[in-house]
Image 1 (tube, rainbow, N blue to C red):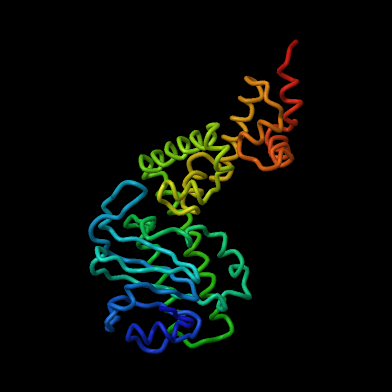
Image 2: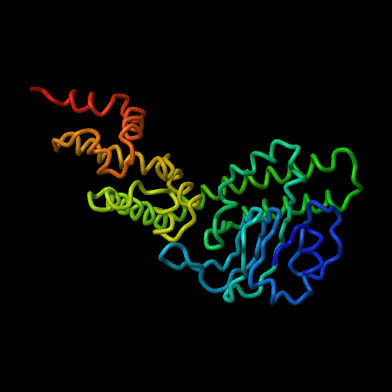
Length: 299
C-alpha cells in the first residue's frame, strides 16, 4: 500500500489531520483503525523514525536471535517497503513522519542521506538504555511541543534543529551498541573475513569476479549499511575498504609466491581489466604491482 502524503497515512490510521502537512508525530496509543491491511506491506514517500516501547519475542540478527524486550528505535527512508511481523505484538511509543520537502531547503536535506541507519532492517534497530530513552523521548516531546505551538518564522528551523539533534544522538547510540554488543559484532567481523578469504580463493574469484558490498551483506543476512557501519566502528574501515584490503593482501601473496604476470594476477582476483587492478594496487601500496615485485627481488 503506497502513501504519498502524511495526511493519507493519518486517514488510514484513523487519526486526525496532521497539524503540519509535511511533518507529524504519531502516538501509537491514539491509533484506532484496523491495520490488518497495512501489515501486509507499506510504502512511504517520506522518512519515518519510530520509537517502540516493547518488542516481544526474539529479533533475528544475522544467523542468531536476541531478546529485545526493552524496546528500540528504527528508521525508514522514502520508498522503502516495510511490514509488521506477526511476533512484534502490541507496543506503545511514537512515530515521527517527515516529508523530504520539509528539510529540502536546509543542510539536513542533503546530510540525511549520510545516516546509514535509514537503510538498516528492523532486526538492526537501535536498542536504548534508560538514559538514552529519556534523551530520545525528550527530543520527540520537544518536536511535539513546537508542532502544537503557533507557527512563526522560526518554527521550521527549530523543528529541523531538533530533528538533526535526534539523528546525531542516534548515530552516537548506534556506535555504543556496536561496542556493547561486541560479541555479536566480532562474530560478524569474523564471518566477513572468512567470506573474503573464500571469495579470493582461485576458484571463486575466477568464476564470480570481485565481491560487492551487497553480496557480502546478503551472505551474512544483514543490510549493507549496517555491516559497513559495524565494521567501521570495530576496525575503522567499512566493508568496501575491507574488500580492497583483503584483495591487496592476496595480490601481494601472488606477486611474491608465483610467476604469474600482473595481468594474470588481476584476472585471477576477479578483475575484468588489469588496468583497474593496477590503479587500485598503486593507490593502496603506493607503488605499481611490477615495482612491488621488483622491490622484493634481491637477486
